[in-house]
Image (cartoon, rainbow, N blue to C red; front, side, top):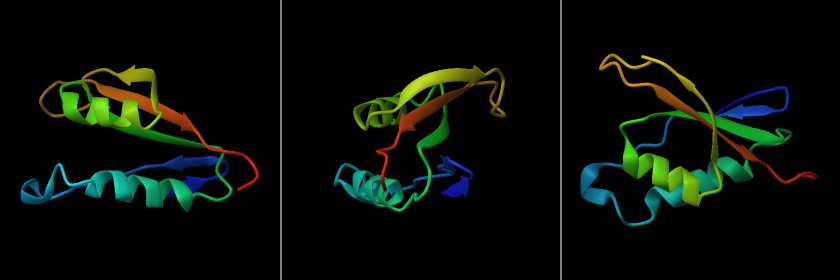
Length: 89
C-alpha cells in the first residue's frame, strides 16, 4: 500500500493459486487496513472482469466509486473501489 495524505492506495494482493481459498488474502487485507495510519480511506482498482476479486472486496466493505475505461491491456475497465477507514487510528 501507498499512503498519500489521508488516502491509502492498495496496490496488489496476490495469493498463489495453490494457496487460495484459505483466508490468506483476507489476512493480508486485514493487515494492510490495520497499518494505514493516518489514512481515512483506502482505494484500489480491480478489473471489471475479475468477479472473484470484486466480490472479495465488496465483502470486505469496499464500494465502487468509479471506473477507468479500457484501463487494462485486454480492454477491461478498472473498477475503482473505496473503503472508509475508522477515525482515531
